[in-house]
Every structure is written in structure tokens, then in C-alpha cells.
Length: 133
Image (cartoon, rainbow, N blue to C red; front, top):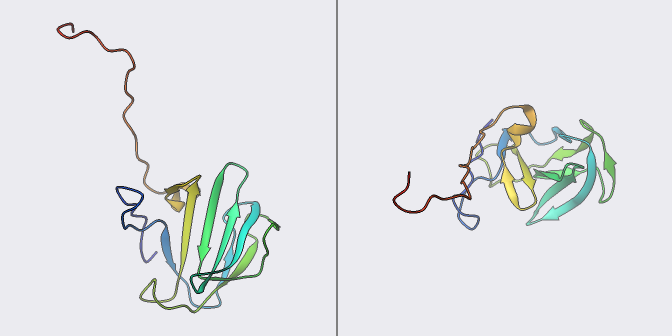
């Protein structure tokens, strides 16, 4: 792994919304899970593949020369393309792998049983009147 998941504090701020994996151009890219290809094509001068999963998750892969097409069903581990030789994102050739639930970016390492889990506080809806314990 060249770079880990570092989400921004606010959705509009800079951050790293996935992980970068060292991968020479031509390396085969495989789907992290079964699903349907939501997008396979160019975006901002690099190839992108997005897989929609039954559990509401979406995985993204770039830069990838797709070997799949929109609407195609893919299985876990099935080849979806190859890493493109596109400079700019990493200091060396890499695959950027992302994970989303709706519009929320998640650490893709969670799919492997790894990654950072963030616990949120649970707020009680019942509040005692002022002056009472």
C-alpha cells in the first residue's frame, strides 16, 4: 500500500478517499465483491470502473482500462480491467481503490476485515431537568 485512507473532516475538503496500491501498468484488476458494473469508461482522462454491490456498497477502481461494460454482472475476484499507465495520482504506477455507501466514503480495507473503525457517541434522547442528577 502506497497511501492509506484519510477522509476529510468535511465532504468538501481535501482528503484521500480510498487507498493506493502499487501496481505496474497492465496489472489485472479484480472486483472486490460480486455486483453490477455501474460505470466503466473514461473520466478526467483516466479509466474508471465502478461496481455496485447488493448491500448498498459501491467500489471504485482507477486508473483502469476496463474489460467490462456498464450493466454487466461480475463475480468476486473477476477481472474488470488492467491498470493504466497514467501519471499524476501516485509517484509510481498505482491502483486507487475506493469504497462508498451512498455518498459516504469508507476505508476499502474494511472489506478485508481491516481498516479503521470509527465509533460515534450515542446521545440519549431523554434529558434530566436542570439541577437534577
